[in-house]
Length: 328
Image 1 (cartoon, one colour):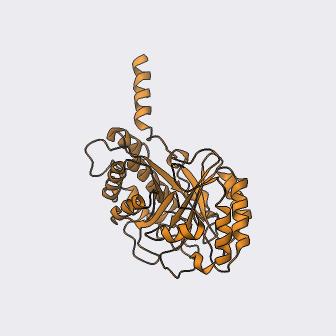
Image 2 (cartoon, helix red, strand yellow):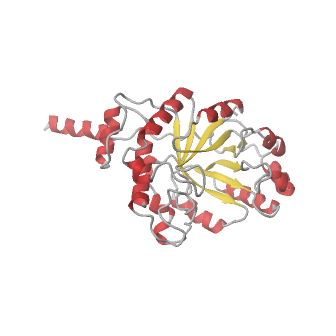
Image 3 (cartoon, helix red, strand yellow):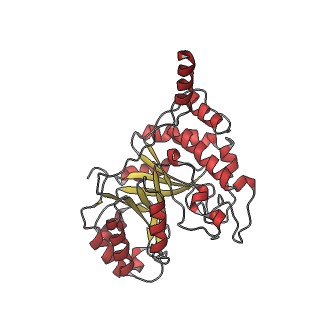
């Protein structure tokens, strides 16, 4: 009996995923962030505070080496926004089902090793806005029709779980046992234990789907509590849906909350900035806000097009709750 019980315990341990890690700010604080360019200098001067987190949009099989260099140069913690395609409308590198079946393991293994080599926390915002039809990994077309089994919500969840297990690393036998439990193939291309990097996984859907159908709700893409470190969404002044934001925030009460992207878009509206920061200050699980200024210097999100909002943002960031560095 004791031997049987021991065998069961060994199997349970072997099937357990690597420990989730948040790497958030101190209690009551928020990491500021920036994404959309290779330098933080202009933005920092505009708002009077440097970003603690520096994000980069990247995609499957793309080299990420430059992102580590730029984040180090900015003295900021790295965030990777990982898609399966270079841009909207561009052919995808891999489908969610392909990821789930191990066809993307080489990329995941390389990223696992590179983050471990960095020796400091990295945030991975994996396949964000998954319920937004413009993203290749969304399960639905604009008209609500399915993109098939290779892009189903089931395939997405399997792809996320596999990615989480490989990126977090650990004993290969443990990872493969968990994959087997999930009815997924063993790690492809590894014959020894994986490094365990300081890595945090961010699950960031839209608060409602595009198309807005029940099957495309955020919850349809939820991979499970043990595979997610942060929950969040993206929020732009052009769509100030605070009631929807309230509902979404309440649905995942045990996770720190992140605005993976937020920005001005459209009118120069300082009232939006004031309302957003008032919301953040009233919702204590918000731990990170990443402003997306876009790659185009003259793009719609750049603060030079929104002088009044920029002044309001600068004022809001004077609050000591918003940190300019991870060591502050």
